[in-house]
Each structure stands twice: as C-alpha cells, then as structure tokens.
Image (cartoon, rainbow, N blue to C red; front, top):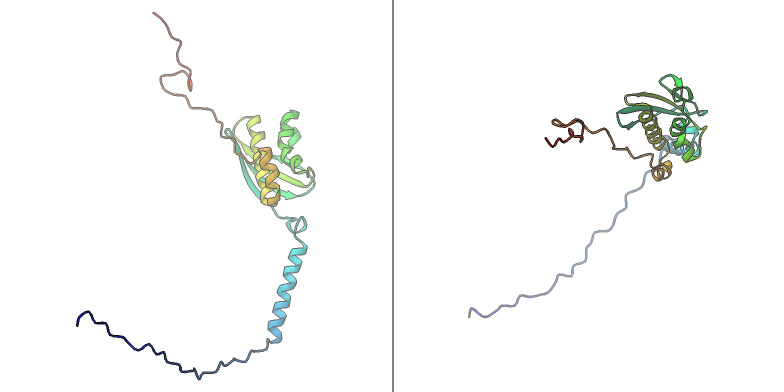
Length: 185
C-alpha cells in the first residue's frame, strides 16, 4: 500500500478572465509644460552650438606640474599666447633658449602656440626642474581644457610625472651611495 501512488486530476481551470483592459485617458500637456520643454531644447541647442573655444572663453583651467623639487601651479585661459612666470615673461624668466622651448613644448605639440595665456607660479628646485614642472602643468591644464589633446600630449611624454629625484644620504656613507675610500692598512 505504501508503494501505491495516487494520481491527482490534472484538469486545469479554463476560466477566461472577464477583466477588460482599461486605458487611462492621457492628459494633454499644458501650455506652460510645452513652453518649458521648448526652452530646455533651445538651451541644449545653444550649448551645443557654443561648444568649443567660445564656450570656454574667460574660464580658467588649473593644474599643478611637478619635477624634482619644483612645483608649478598653472592657470590657463584662452588668449593670445602670453606666458607669465612669477610675474615675468617666460623669455625673461628663462634666458636659455632650450628652457624656453621646454615651456612652450605642449602648445607646439597640439599645434596651438598662440591659443592660450598661462599664468604660472613656480617655486622650489632649479631652473631646469622648474621649466619641466611648468611643461607638466601646462600639459595637464590643456587636457582639462580639451580631452582630445590627451592623446598627443601623452605620446610626447608630457603628462607623465618624471619620478626621478635626488636620493637621500644614508648614514655611514658620504652620500646616497658613495662610501668612504677603502684603505688597506
């Protein structure tokens, strides 16, 4: 008796649902709502139209560049291509031509030498470290301005923070690695 399985009836109820699908009447948008939508569309169109140089005119783009012990704080704005470093023109601040070229390298790389004004505050390090810190800062600010510049600047190596620094002196040695001269006797 225990092994006997009882079969249940497998008849499904075939009742049809009597509910009808009722549609709610849609409300017509009011004049105010349509006006708001139109205003929003116009604003979006105007923003898309002004995208590019015009929409960023007057806006500042900040970035910090570093190299060795030098730190450069860069403020970039659309302008005529003037670069001032600690209140001086970059040609007066860096009299060597090679250092001047390092400073304007990012703008040459993107092909817009006279497109931006840069106001830079730099301190620490020597003149070579400061020039490369400014290059790093200007490159970062240009990427903030237009993300399409990133590819060119990265390929040129201007976005990488150069990690090489002076190694600290260790005790028992004369410098970072220089030991005292070995004496046989």
